[in-house]
Length: 211
Image (cartoon, rainbow, N blue to C red; front, side, top):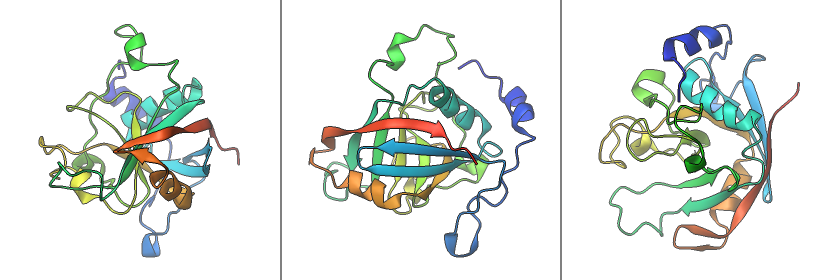
């Protein structure tokens, strides 16, 4: 994606999202200026707060898809539980979502604004893969586009230095669920074949939440 990192940080520097994950007992405190999203799914509604200060490139990338309406009609297509990853020594619990199939990543020409983005490592952002964290799916570093996932339970092996991905670079967490963890767990336990949700759980709409 052709977003200069330094320029994006200057643009977003005026947004303040202090102590996003730092409340007592893990309570989430979203400041007024934070980007709050409402994700409506077949299984219920999930509210998310994003951190554009500590993960500016990742948040800007995600919001580009949101504002273009490309998650509307998207799906949760993958669930990872403790009993469906027999080939992984390091186990995690997540659900993974994608844009509407009409908007596939490979349909975009190079330099269209939807190119893969730089990996904002947790060692740089300080945002960890805690229970309810939202993060970007990827293959190698700097390959994330529109795929994302939610953590079920704390998943430190997805942070920088974690062993889930052999490269040890971790994934780019960029926000956290503030309401709807029960919905995420319901999706995780939906009917599946191995890790594939059958049928996928439809994302009806993702939109900015008005105050």
